[in-house]
Length: 427
Image 1 (cartoon, rainbow, N blue to C red):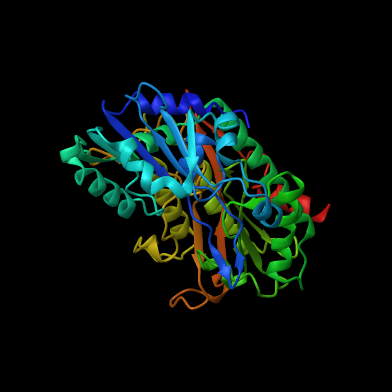
Image 2 (image 1 turned 60 degrees about the vertical axis):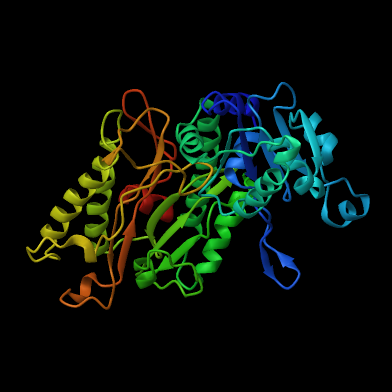
């Protein structure tokens, strides 16, 4: 990974008030069941500033300190635990490999943090983080206040780090974009493999396995999120993740799947026929979604509002549903298209960054990356809909970079045209 973590820390420190301390906590391991854990994933903002991937760690930045501006707390080296659970960087590694000016044992955090915060006027921390720094932060400040007669001075202000840090993460550097393109390339390969492999009689989870295999073969150890593999009516369930149904001849399958590569996500959806051939009804609905995809992407350019692509998707889908006779003139598209057209994407699949500034939809700027993912979903339980349309669920999604003069698709080679999909699946 070619990322300058020091430059990121300097850029953040230049934005905070003087006499401040910045505190970020690592994410905690997640228990799957009994003594089995889910694979560990570091908090994105913690990793963004440090590159450090271990639990039980704390990042402290002190812009006004004469020395030891970057302090880390981390686990001790422990040969026995390391033989069981894997290598630890330890305090020496935190300094030599991750650039900390000083590192301490995580077991000493409650003793030493009041000393590191003593005399600072402001403490910045993430108010949106799920990692629970508020309680220990309160305890550390209480400890400092208890020593005021000894000359200690407790912080006066608790301030949110989120806006500054999220704005930094929102606009991607050239190195970040290169990583995201690689994630997109691996994900594209997975969608192509799935189109080549699918057949009637497979289970959804067997198709999902093609994605996981391709992710790992491409160098991405994990998916960026739980993959959605929905055949037939299951494609109409937006966050369907059971992935345990049979894929039937004549049905479409909607797959929303992307890998995480070097801590950056890809998020791509493709919808294709299980037997390799769209029916006339499936093709008609698909072409409406694809046109909404095209026209929404055309709205991605500097100066346009965040909401512009979504408004365009609503316009195109409403017209298309009317042309197909599905709206019957009432223009209530929401029972067929009930989500936004996209979201920010980066280190998190639903990445950080405000969508409004001062109450108004924000302007798109170069370096922002978003998804474009219009869809139409016709549940088989919908009343007043001809049976020939029921059970058709379609979404087309790509990751899109805002450039200086427009947009760039970071996942350009994943087939999306009907003819290209059918040719690939039948060649």
